[in-house]
Image (cartoon, rainbow, N blue to C red; front, side, top):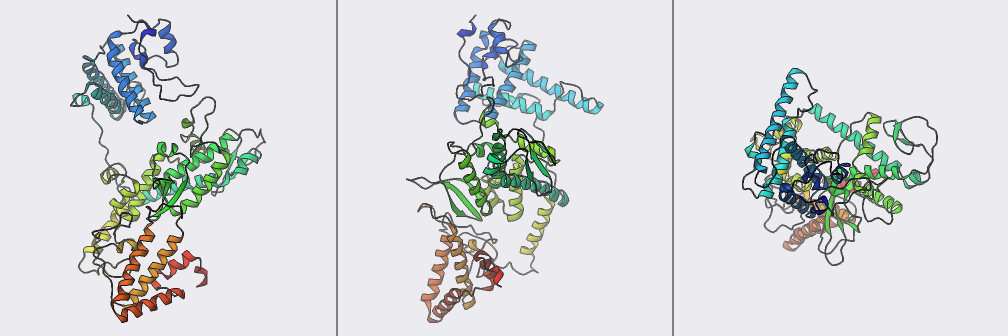
Length: 565
């Protein structure tokens, strides 16, 4: 029998652990009873011989499982997934230890099926407990839990054994079907209201936790919320309080972490990134390129165009710029966008799980909205606003089928709007849909043959899209020329608000729209003397600030002259 010192190293050197964390080590699976032992003590138990000799017949199987998991880590697999895989494997091996099931490459299939059957029987116990009203059975689990455990171990074994069919199909474990129930109008409004309240809390924390507050204010720090409540921070935790005794002003890092956690959740809600993606972003030389109704945030590269990191709404840009200034002031030496600092031996990436915000929400009796629900709310809001699944999938960076299956929530309000829109388009007794841009159309959006990649796609909702729609028609009239020139002026204002740091390869959609409109005006000007006069008159009106009524109010809002009406 090999000694513990002679066993292969089945640790995970590419995974970072805090000083108080126990590194993962699959060697414990080679000992009978090692899978069920306490992680912090199992090493000492094995060294002291209390677990007996390692079972050499398991070595090949455990080594292959370790190799598979380690390869997934090397290819960028999430740490949380790896942790869940190891926990499920420990449960599987603990079952084999209790029931004396052999665990070798040749016998693991039968042992897995026995374990899966035991999980199935535990779901039956859960059902009986629910029916009898007895919820104290520690062995009872739901079918969803049993299926999750079985599927995770099954996928690992499928890859290790190079199976062509799934091991899970040999068991009685089934994935519970999730039926999407329609959300009523009132329930949908309530859900949005709770999300907006949570968003207001995030905004209040970001607004009031300034550099001066974090570095200089005396404790306890009182944060005035727009709800009228006062959040008192005493140095370690937040609680509702009207007064409090001052404590030592030395604990400032938790306040900085609270602001960063609020900013992190704000970014997730704005961009649709998952928490891990947002948390791992590096601080780069960001610049902004106008795109749809917001900006693409890119990182400047000298030799090539910047890579799109994420997309934001235009109203979020000043907030994001303010955070970057705050973050550079407090953490000038860090390369991370969210430089959480490990405290007491913990990992920095374990410091941003939402724990601070959860505690504050409990104190305020406010619903905590996790990142997954923030992303889900964003997708459904875009669906309801645009009524365009293709556009929403593009903005959410998902395949259309994935978005509809995983994110869409049936909505009575949206269904009613879609029914009204359908009959508005196809009822022969109603008038045709009017174009959203100057000109005429038949209400059916269709891309022209050579549409630029960055140009807005026709969708009968955004005026810029009409410029590249095959079914859009110019109108031979001076009013149309005036409206077209006004539209060009509107896009010129938008272009002036776009960052000048962009690369030559990154052409803002507003610039494409201006060039397209200018080509139309040039054609009218060169065609006949009468049309040439129309163009000159329209340009003279624009120079005098006399805009077409269809876009006059929007231009005044952008120019800040709306008060001069």
